[in-house]
Amino acid sequence: MLSLRSDAFRNGDAIPIRYSQEGNNMSPPLEWSDIKNGVKELALICEDPDASGDEPFVHWIMYGIDPQTTSLPEGIKTFGEISKPTHARQGVNSTGRIGFSGPLPPPKDDWHHYHFKLFALDEKLDLSAGVGRDGFYEAIEGHVVDTGETIGRYKRKKG
Image (cartoon, rainbow, N blue to C red):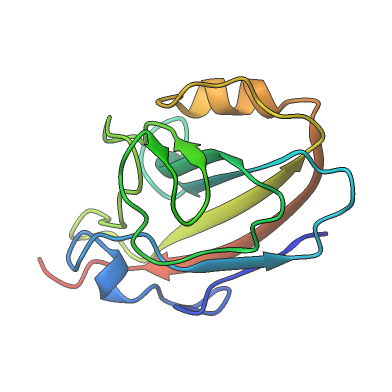
């Protein structure tokens, strides 16, 4: 199994406000290891299953990540296609925008959980920038050879 972690928070701990919409609304740093040989691409999604609605709220989708890449710094630009720190494409989150959208649960909600999931794929996806959750999961189906996950929590600070 892939090892996925963040220097910003430990698995199961609170996500710092700077990564939320109450702060700087920037993606947290992520690191991973134990990528198997033969992996052609990495893909990432961050979802909040505690949000109201039938499906989890998507905060971030990224794919086309080179398997030689072992980390993402904080603050990845919210462009459909990025070239730094690695070439990759980003999908549409549940706010309808491309790139990362930080935590912001409703004011009266308790802690929400943010699942950052990394998928190692056996082939490169033929996806343009701007794919949504359904298209993402449809594209990776049958191609996932390994996964890693880390979970952060967030509770709104301001009413």
